[in-house]
Each structure stands twice: as C-alpha cells, then as structure tokens.
Length: 271
Image 1 (cartoon, one colour):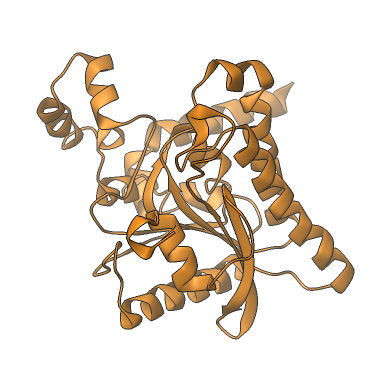
Image 2 (tube, rainbow, N blue to C red):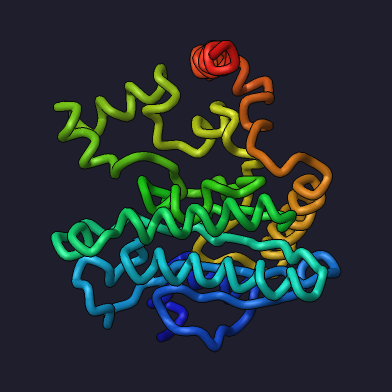
C-alpha cells in the first residue's frame, strides 16, 4: 500500500511508530517516545475483511476483539516485567461497523471488550493517551480512545468527535448541513469542530499548526513532545477520569451534568 492510499491513522502510525509487522485491521507495535518505550495502536482500513461493512477504518467484530487483545497483551507482558508502558491509541475511526452479521454476532461485545481492555490498562497504571488525527465517531471512539487518561487532538480539517456524521445528523434533525453548523455555534455538543469539543472539558490539548495528512519532521516532533508531556501528566494524576469534570471549561459548559452526577452520588450513598 503506497503512502498516497494510506488512511490518516496509518500515516500517523508510520510517523510515530515506524513500520509494522502486523496486519490490518489493527496495527500495534512498540516505539521509542520521550526516552522510554511506548506501545502504539491504530485501526486501519482492511479491504479484504470478511465482513463487507468493516473494510474501512471502522470498529467491527474483528477490530474490537483485536484491539482488546493488543491492549491486554501489553498489560500481561508488563505485569511480568514490572514496567508500565504508555499506550497511545491513534484515533482515526469513522464509526462502528453497521451490518446485520455484525449485530447478530455481537459487535457490541467486541466493542465492549476493547473498552474494558483500555480501562483495565489505565487502572493497572499504564498511561493511556488518545491521539485524534481524524474522525472519532460514535461507538468506534468509545471502543478506541475514549477510555484514555488523556485525550489530545490535531486542530485540523477532518478531525472531529461526534455521535454521527454531519450528513446523517442533518437528516435525523431534519435540518440542512448548513443549519446544523449554525446550531453548533450556540449548542456546544452539536458542533463538529474540535475547538468546540474542547470546551466540554473532554480534550486535554488541541495541537495547532499540524498538517494532519502530510506532517513534516518538525510537526511530528511537536506531536511527540505533546504525547510525552501528557504521559507525564497521566502518571502524576489519578487513574480514573474524574479530571474531565474539573476543568474550567467543564465547570462552565457541563454544569448540569456535574450537578446530576452529584445528586446521583448523594442518593446512592444515602441508600
């Protein structure tokens, strides 16, 4: 596969981790980062996948189980060695795979296995960093990236976090794409821009000035520095995800969510 036909996630895997001996649809491998060894994982297109709905960079049955295996192998190996390698999830996933066979064979279980593996790695002391270089959509992002200690993203065209694609959301809400964009200017969760997503307190850093499709050496090094710093912060912080509700942005734009959580905890503890 030539560089011109690689997905964005595959290009960034090559840029940060080098070549891979693995096969599609999940690439996984070690590389040096900030003076230590980190493990990089990416979901890439698989034109020969046996499931027709899962040939693109999506999370289907095989992708979910392979993600879970890749993460759990790192945890198992490091439990023996005593190290705790950072895990970097390179996120460029368009969706979970929608298909009759996927639903019948339990795509929800495959995605849940990946979620559980990432959460278990984080709980075991592995700094898990999600680097969003493309779309981070729906259940695919929940399975690959959302359980990270820290989430960073390139501020570039084509990067977004959302429940569904813009055209689909426009149809569901019976709006034009233009009207949906206008709505996103006033209702933060409806926006498709990474800058707006950052206002929810879920993004730890937005990396500006990076060519997401063809980064030069200086830009790649800049991303490496960001990852290294976020690994340091992850190790210094807690292993849960409570910090996502503690930032000024979250306090301002997720006040209702924070209050609901407070009341739920209060009632739960009262039982």
